[in-house]
Length: 410
Image (cartoon, rainbow, N blue to C red; front, top):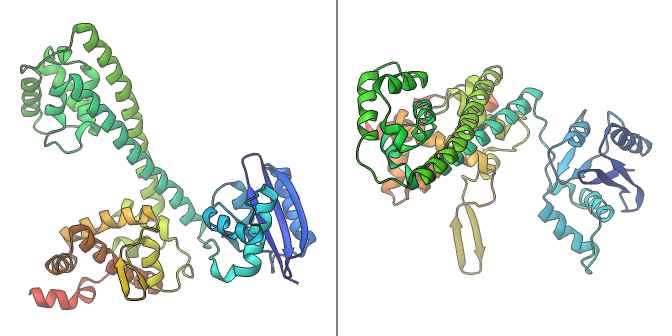
């Protein structure tokens, strides 16, 4: 007799239900979110036939947390069911729209009983791949946070300190997030203080920010901008805005430091993975961006049945909606957003370094695709190649990948 388990998780406790093949409720319980609760859960599963060779499958609505880590040990199949899907299944059991945590646990167990073949278990990624996923996602979040704080700082400077924007934003790589900009702004949080900066002070600040070349020319440029004529707020208002800017600058320093530290950790972990050599052999993929791709696709070779499944997961494959005489082909909106973002950066870089990728992109543009659509089509093709290379552990070959295009442009 097969047994299925559903768990409705919460912050302090979890409700679980066990059902058999006929849908009969075998057991239900509420366990605390601690080690004692996890032991109770494993004991309850063992009482109903859970063994290392034949573990009871479990359905839950999350992929994170210690509870998930406990359940993922061994060969157990753990299914992360989308909460929206659970809400639809709930209507099969009751039309009164009643809801309870034990009831949701029962719904989850019955999802596996009736439709387990329609849902995918969590991939059996290696421990190193899961660690890379944690670091890569944290680094990406840190980069986004850094940009958010930089945008807030830019908005504030625009209100009272336009000289800083002229010096470090207009036409400058890195903008306010650059160490040089942060070092100078920390020295002069108001335009009045900036106008009084001497060349030695500016020179020392940009050197602290990492500049090694053309220091004299850069020092002169910054001083000229700071001493140009600008409109000022009243002194007390300007001083208050300077304090606000200094607070934002400290946040930006912390965000930038976190992003840099996490980037180093990501690259160090990624280089240890056996798939790293294959991934970085693709044009446009370095260690950091390659780690982001690996973090989202994992290293479980059975996760995707074919390249089409991977493309659909990434959102690069188009979706068709057909009914009667109407047929629509468009891009996917339900996808892995992090992988899609990595794909945008990947193809943008590949176009500049790979003749074949550039030829493919240009051909799509000539056929009428917008920039984003052409990039998405290239990403779709590159994912197919990546799937093949990972399955066969072969490196990317430019000539084999784009032979017809390279021949046509020769």
